[in-house]
Length: 172
Image 1: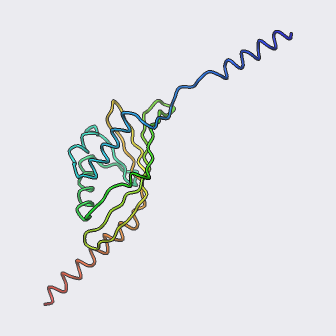
Image 2 (image 1 turned 180 degrees about the horizontal axis):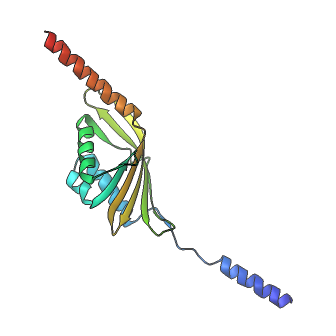
Image 3 (image 1 turned 135 degrees about the vertical axis):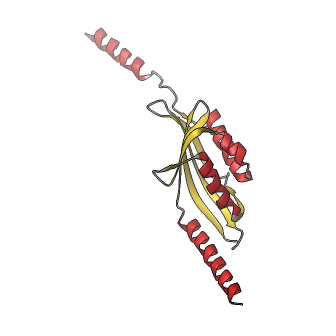
């Protein structure tokens, strides 16, 4: 009985020591691809940015409704055109690749986007989270989360100032 107990204990220890497959990776080809896309965004290299996506990729920006890669590029171009400088704080960012329970490959990025509006010289810092799914090395789905309240308010203020300026010029 004692031998059976020791054998059971040894077997339990053996099972407990089995290593589980690694599911979290601070560095991978996918994290490098995402960082390359971020650098392309920061330099306005939209062809390189688009090259990381499949043609049918779905991008969700604070929404349950997706937009195409082409539509996303257009909105990013419109946004960055209003800024004299923009990019991410690379000193305070975090990225990891995860193989989820369905063995899907996701990359998660947390960072702070910093942009200065050309019209007002106002700088905004906005926390951003990206959840990006990869298949065969390409992005098939991207979820972008940020609080756009301050950015939307700044765009509204710029539009209001432009409208007031136009009205003042037409009265002259």
